[in-house]
Length: 116
Length: 116
DNA sequence: AGACAATATATCCGTCACGGATGTATTGTC
DNA sequence: GACAATACATCCGTGACGGATATATTGTCT
Image 1: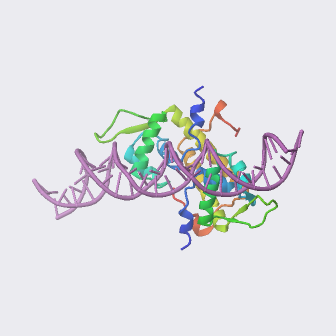
Image 2: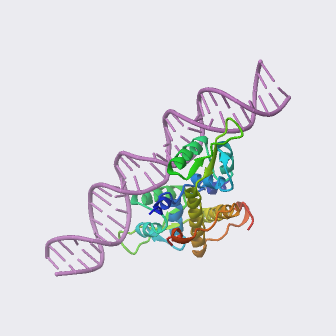
Image 3: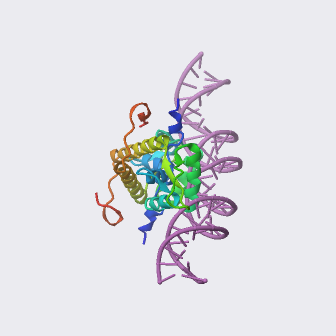
């Protein structure tokens, strides 16, 4: 009954989603994760390492054990983590689509400047 | 100038997004908001009324003052609230699109709630 | 070589959102 | 009249968040 592992974490917090997303295209070390995640959502070191601990405990992320720099600790998504990221991505798409169906219009003009 | 009012609330928590989303297609009373929001994300009464208070204080939601039932208190989005909802909807779309670009695949099989 | 910023990880702790429990009153139903 | 559902509200424990802080190493500038 390991299927419930997935839904136990959804919806993800914006911070956790940004962390998993940063790891989606390959393993990264903590500092690099934080820098990329900060492009999407505010992120202090406490949030990063605290969230990483929870993700490691939950089995969504694991350490690689390898490093190119003594200081760095590299992390990668586990299959479960990748599946959770996929599920949350789908949830976000559905939520946004639902909003559009409700008549929520795209932003116009000066407020539309979004970070990417 | 007033543009910062928007970003001060983004990213929204899943609970707050669900509440604003429930109000997107018209005014509703608290209990109805909670019922609809629960279809998207777990939601206790403490979260609902606590979040409503914050949203009222922040000026994203306002009371209508009208009711068809003595017990009910109706709420609607303010222009600022609607704009915030639009901004967060756009953020979710961009986050999901970014994930897709990173190779996050749609869910397959039993874990996929809705067909795409 | 020495000074200083940036990199990199980690912990501590105050703040605040979350959400279950609980309470009260009203409406609907049998 | 009894009981469930509706409807709103408050209380409070838990836990995520994120700034502050600490430590060590690497890179850069003069």
